[in-house]
Amino acid sequence: MSGSEHEESKASLLLAWQVRGKQALVIGAGDVALSRVNHLVRAGSHITVIAGENESSIHPEILDLYSKKKIHALLKRNYKASDLEMYRTSRHDIVYDPHFLENLGPSDYETLQHQIQNEEFAIVCCCIDDYELSTKIYYQCKYLRLPVNIADKPELCDFYFGSMYNRDNLQIMVSTNGKSPRLSRMVKDSIAKQFDGTDLNKAVHTLGMIRSRFREKVIVDDDLASIDIRMTWIKSLTDLFGLKEWSELDFGETDEEKKENVDKILSYFPDLPTDNYEEFKLLLKKC
Image (cartoon, rainbow, N blue to C red; front, side, top):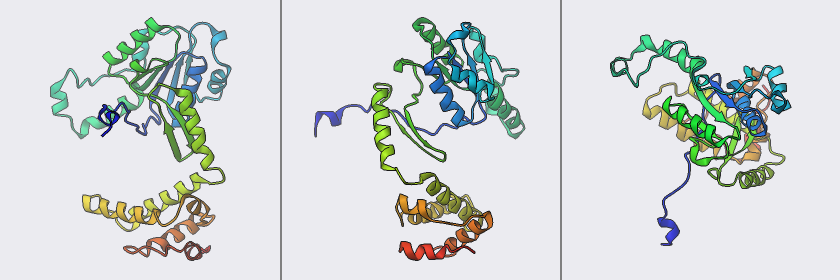
């Protein structure tokens, strides 16, 4: 066994982080801040940008996004510590109230959900060229238990952005754990070339439609056995064809046509439909 196999893994845990509709804070308004804002816009976040008091340093695309209401708030002033709690109007602090944590029940869920969605920053991105202040912001976020990314300082990051390949429903992230963003982009571009001419988003939409309808019509329970049956059958169905084949299948134009064609496929359960692609296509003639 080589020495490298004994080395401790330095990889990150790559996750699809759901921040849609949640508060996001970006500190700074230059090129790096713009890249963070673009990621957050695609993710559907409720974005606040603290741009600094020098208006001429604000990236014009950030101003454009604000004018198009893609950014919720653009504050043309310097950062202050209270910004990290600017939307907080109530507090159920389970860290300092173990009794509340132990007795948390359904009557508290709505209040907590409102707080999570509207009052707490789900993500903080610091994109300023001030090492001392950036470091301070990192520890302020840690004190408040807020996940934060300090640009160009991997050791002060709870997460990295990496290079993203985005096709609506399909996202692929390449990360070097902050060591070489340029290399991440090169790898991402290489992956993207492999998908030229393939409508991956259509493939994702088609298989997602089948999975959703399968759960709605065939196996509706959520016990472990039912989940295992659903996952096994959908996996086997997906494996029948490659990406290009799934992207070229036509399930119809209208919602009704798509639903009827999906139901044809589901009618084979617990067996699978044919794995002959041409025969499979014949099953999907418009209704």
